[in-house]
Length: 196
Picture 1 (cartoon, rainbow, N blue to C red):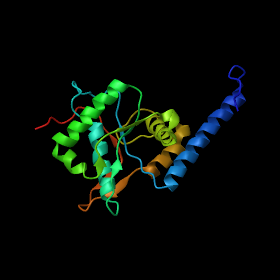
Picture 2: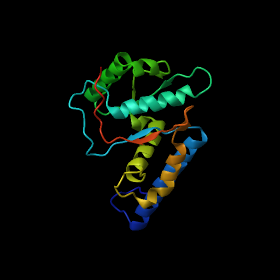
Picture 3: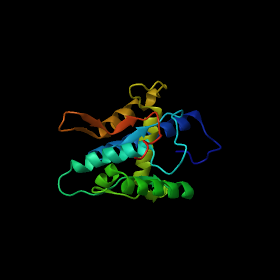
Picture 4: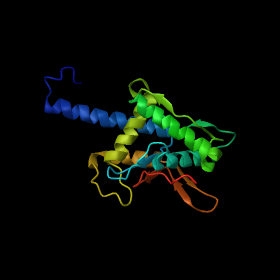
């Protein structure tokens, strides 16, 4: 354990790195054993961004769609929060609230999906919320280790066991029409479709 950051040795740093990887593995495995599902969009840095901030970005619309499919496949009458955010910037949070409201009120798909999804993001502080820390681990593993088709950036080899766990957590479903739906998707353009 590192108690004194000024007297770091290579052995202690190695042990700290190994402990972090083991903590991440344990957290992801625990999430899997309790039925957690992963939904994520992977957006390259160079992806075109919307010019205005009044419409919901395509990556969020994708997440709403997949979360709706997940809830719709559950027995009973499920209802769920969809977006839980680490609140970092209040002005960005207010913009997102307006975009989500517009999506659920002004689009037909949004109105249909609001039957199962509580149409308002939930904001938390990750340093106070354990499950958000687990989501941060998933995001890190996806960003640095997971590669889908058409992704060319190199992956960090030491994250391979964690990538395998994230793949096992990924939401998967086959539709009645035989299409396969996955919870992980590469989105290379964030601009939303124009509203009719």
